[in-house]
Image (tube, rainbow, N blue to C red; front, side, top):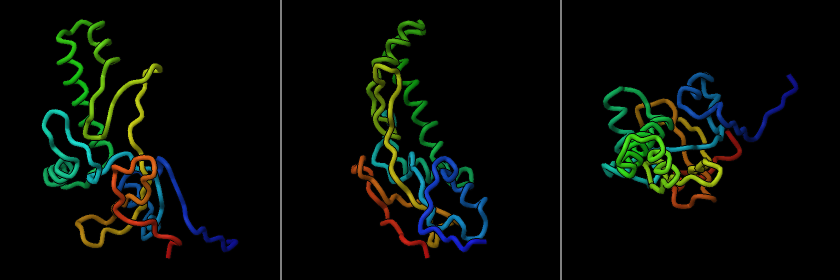
Length: 164
């Protein structure tokens, strides 16, 4: 009503998935920036099979006829962690498993996992921007437009600003 037209909009958890962009309707998601937990473009590989994020996403989309999302990588990394912990614990004893978790130092498909003294691990997060998927099978795709803290995760596009 007041004619306010923001030059850019950044949303955190509200715009993590392609379904979030779809839910806005029309072209309203175009140019919205958000945090990006994981994509097919991340440089890491599965610690036990060597599969890349791109290969995992392609297989998921072909098998399910649905677009990949960031949770896919984290579910896969969770399995990697279970395998790693159990192999190192060499037991189902709770204390041995707990010690193996504490000592975790593993590069997974989502990046390095190593717990600190406060029992948590930060995984890489970069900045992304939603754009129409003009050349692909899906309506929307996330481009990596900011990687200052994790330059090993290559940008896939420059920030489109201001939004047309």
